Image (cartoon, rainbow, N blue to C red; front, side):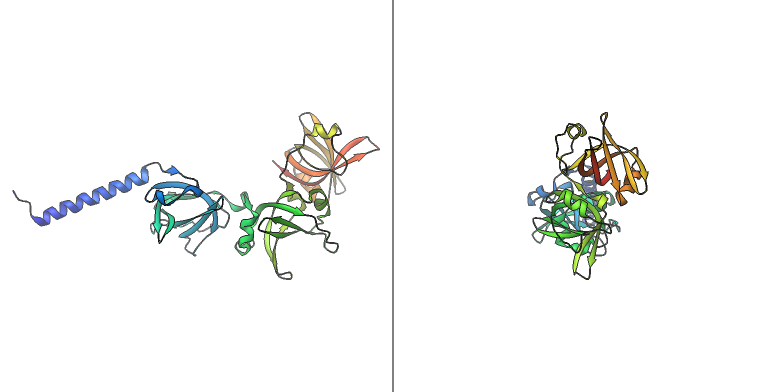
Length: 311
């Protein structure tokens, strides 16, 4: 019996739709391959992958076009019309995206086709952003609280001891604080530091700066064992970073106490804003930065703290 042409067309269309739906289900439910962002290339056209990167450009107000960066590479991400955009994204957020690789006008893109295809792994203010990324377009980070690292230049500013300059290979940015940074400058000059603060525009100087507190600046170098300090292996005036448990007492805006590590303890003292930080972290495991001083009166070492944070 001959099947009518119209019925044949309907059957063929149904079969094609069924295949398309099945392909879509397989595409979505199959485990995507994780590919580092810098390794995504044109040979993966049509593949379903997962990758991660820092949000460098939140795109249009609809948040449907994103740009991710990692290890010097850049990748465009496009949200399908059916995907609900994340409205609270901010530059520097670490995102995980899962979607299909496409080549559009010669550019590689990842198209997200489901709401589960994009999620925030870490907020910008919870991770350390490369200073080069901040400097590339500081206006995007204006008003944002972030963590970044760079080399602290030693500057003899005379008239403004509350400002320091932090540099990276692509430029520099000023750090400033409501309290004196003189002690921080002396202990950290020409060293790599990590700071937490708010990016703001200084209209008077026509430049972007990071507002920090002296208690948020830390070296990123090696942590010194307390036993090495007690053994006299360091000279007075050396800046060190130590780790241990804080035991603190406060008297007239000055914190006195110990940092205890593996049964050994080092005397510490903190003043001003750092004093309150010491008090808040009493009994906690902390990372402490300061300058070593030797007391000829007591015959012992003491660390004058410039910054402290809970681990």
